[in-house]
Image (cartoon, rainbow, N blue to C red; front, side):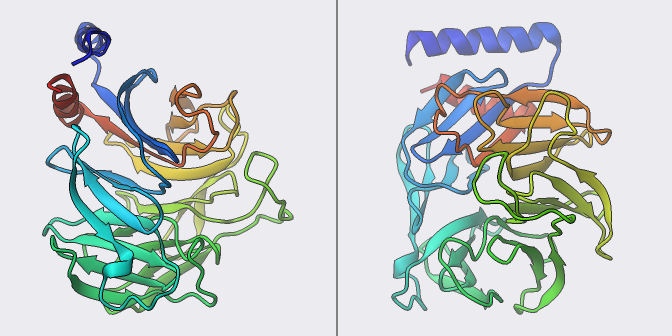
Amino acid sequence: MKPLLLLSLLFFFSACSKQSEILRLVIAAENGILAIADAGGTLLWQHPINQVHDLQLLENGNILVNNGWPKIMELDLAGNKAWEYDSSKTEGYNGKKIEIHAFQRLANGNTMVAESGISRIVEVDVQGELVSSIPLQVAKPHPHTDTRLVRKLENGDYLVSHEGEERVARYNSSGEVVWNFQVPLFGKAKAKGHGPEAYGAKTFSAIVLENGNYLIATGNGHSVLQVTPDKEVVWHLSQNEIPGVTLAWVTTLQELSNGNFVIGNCHAGPDNPQIVEINRAKELIWSWKNVTDFPNNGLSNSLVVEGQQAKRLAERISAL
């Protein structure tokens, strides 16, 4: 292990111990780099990758991540591929262009993959063999816009962010849409671009909160919405409501155990954080920025890891 990295980790553990704080790490991915950093933004581990729009930390300490749009891989911290999935080699592939923008390792060991372009959600086993498949309901299939993030819920439903159609849909295991929410523009006109100057409703992600409502990242809508199952917007974080922060392309979402929200802020420029934590009163609790190692203004995906899970991850890094 490199001496500087070891020194950084030792200092990191010492600081957390002295302050009696919960250990927090950030896994972050931008086209070209996958990295693990501390809460202040210092990189502890990194690996080169190709295009990326999703990531997942697995129970075994490996990371499931894109390596270019048509493929995903399970990567260990030594840089070895423990598993790989190629969408062009799966049963039902029809020769059309496919991009993967969402995937999820499931509790039974299978992997869910959303295949944009041929508009379907599949589950495959450890050999990459097709276990199940449902069609996505999109009017004009497109490899880059059918979906952004997709998550399988505990009851077997799939929660799908349909970027191109600017809506979030919930599908049951038979492929029926059981809930659909069109992301509103709130009376504003659309504007082209990716940064704070742009505007639209190209949703990136959605999660189900502990209270049963949906939390939706509106992408270039620069906002986060909490929506009831009856489709009522009961909480709305807009572009400039967090003091000192401008939201741009809002991407990943997490609900922490303390009830706070962690929000990914992509294409916001070097003066803004790439990740923020806020409470329900929209107060800034914590922010994260590293524009040196992620210089392309395109940090689309991040995952905040805390407590024992973060400790185990840090220990694996220190053992390299």
